Image: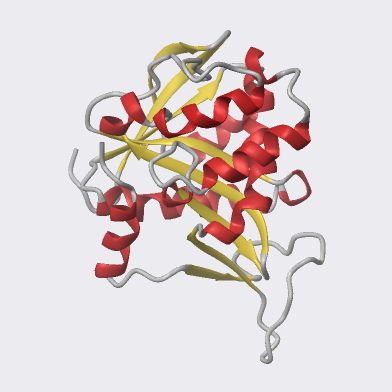
Length: 235
């Protein structure tokens, strides 16, 4: 199991800074961009940090809701968000902050990208086990029991954009940024799974260079498994 502090350390050693996008590069989101002294407007893609917990929990839940996870469907949102905020602070957890990039617009997190290496998958949820009783589950319960990634992949587990910010290029900006993380971890391909019931998302991924390389079941839904070579790496 790799500690994903290493991802951020690798980014820092490579002198990789958060990526800023001016408003003319990605459309203004409902007038919510703020201007600096020069009048420029920015959206920044950056590694997440512990203080982001309250904002990222609802974004993680977007994916949980779409997946219709049976164990979580009756859990009150307040309880679920509280547990997600606590789990976010666990560095080796699937949705722990070292695994996450955020789209930050003037302190407002509009989107997230979560990922890890294939080698992490077998133990990526172990750190959550002590918190499961707070969701009415036993410590040995599993929210995700299906294989989602394969050898050699850096797996994009989650891409989520706030409902109020959708349709303005944030998903594409996050997709572009994940190559930096994957390359720092020496992965040659980025993989993801898209629900076959979500053709809109699949079109986004296809526009950004992902191609279907098979199908799999996650929970009760069938997904297309898609791959894209990491920029600067040879497959």
